[in-house]
Length: 342
Figure 1 (cartoon, rainbow, N blue to C red):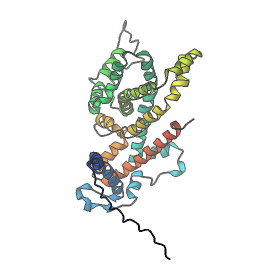
Figure 2 (tube, one colour):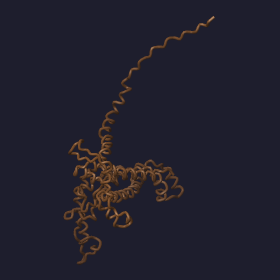
Figure 3 (cartoon, rainbow, N blue to C red):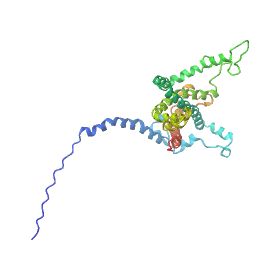
Figure 4 (cartoon, rainbow, N blue to C red):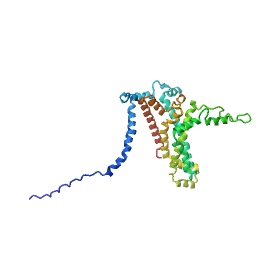
């Protein structure tokens, strides 16, 4: 006899899943961001990398793009004819500084260091002082220091241009007033202060003035950053250190500074990126020329001049990507040093 096998029931009809509005509505809400990012962020970025390999004058349109390969980068770097055999001599560096891109790079580094390092050397102890001494009126003090950061850069630079004016500037009036101060026919402060107006437009003064403006504008921003980090440090650590007999300097050295390291990494990274892209302050102060001998022309100003004044967008894109590589390398080094975990 053959066994009777049970008959399997027919499969139930599959229900068609209906897409509910709450399933696709979140994508609609975030879509504008991605559309704007693709249109005004990612596409220009990729297109500038593409354009850096072409000789392209924008007046000729896209049809005027001609393949150049690495030619734009080699043209910007200008390494031909350098006396490589005397690389440790001053003549080599003078020859290198005479070339446009390297002069702009040297000026950018000079301004970045002169304006950036004092920002943090002042902002850290200033934030610690405000945190410990202005607990009840902390917010008004913070607002006072933060005000330069939210003020228009062009307005700030124009104000400083007036202050450092040769004939009518307040700075010259104060300095020469002290130098010409007379007591019984003698000028006792003439050895320390000038007796005639200083021409602040001379090359030796241009970069320090730009660095001072940048420092003045961003020191409040960094102070606020460090102040916010100080408020996250547990008070128990300071109380325990006080019980152990640690003084104010020892608490600052062994508690505050180590715990501020994550914020130092963040703040210094922003300073590196911002100072190496410096444009507005030197551009407005020097009228776009970079000053006498172009001593204050930065890489961003050179990129602007090559792209919008000369109309050579291929070379301008190459300058931009070379600067991007420098910023990425310095940011990586900063992360390696301050981002390490002890």
